[in-house]
Amino acid sequence: MADLEGKLARLRGILREMGGAVIALSGGTDSSLLLDLAAEVLDDRVLAVTARGPMFPAAEAERAGEVAGRAGVRHAVIDPRLLEDDGVRANPPDRCYHCKRALFGRLLEMARGEGLRWVAHGEQADDASAHRPGARAADELGVRAPLAEAGLTKQEVRELSRRRGLPTWDAPASACLATRIPYGQELTEERLARVEAAEDALREVGFRALRVRDHGGIARIEVPQSEIQRLTAEPLRLEVVARLRALGFTHVTVDLAGLRSGSMDEGRG
Image (cartoon, rainbow, N blue to C red):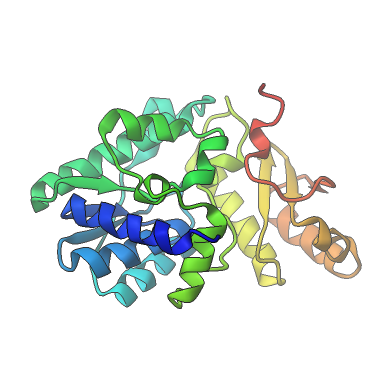
């Protein structure tokens, strides 16, 4: 991270050149840093917008509100009703493209209404190596990714967030709840709510980084490899099984490969 200060200066220059923006604020590490710096550079020419709805954990919207309040920027929370989009609800492999195209389209309308030239989101340089159809939607619509433009990696985003005192600097990586359901299986409010409740249950017993993948009647739990032993030890194992069965899962399993981003994309070539 020897060139971190240079990248930070580059990011400030990019934001200054933009002149004003609507920032898509999820409440995660990346978008939180982007908003914090945008507020510093652009002052009142920033509007933070957070999406809520069945696909987004309620805790993220709460955290986004805290981040926006700390930065002193206006914050709008919207429900883009993404499940009404057939390309999202059907949950194809490029679901994220349809989702982001609908969401960014809404943000572009808001930007025009505010007299702001740009919409920006929190993609950073490491994201280019992941399966992210949503990035294609951003490119098509002209949505900016200032962190990536400045060459900032995830590790560097975390370091800058730590230096700036952001509470999200060490937040576990997150993604919308739709990523917990296999492609081709319809997204419903009930199924997404069950996933959210299952993950909340695991957080209540002390896990921070986790996923509960919903394979119909099977819950496939991912936690870091270092925490698998704790999860499967008594009496916690029995408590987790009871909680998830109460939510409607018939079988509760632990993925021995551990937590990793995008596990639903594995084996897709």
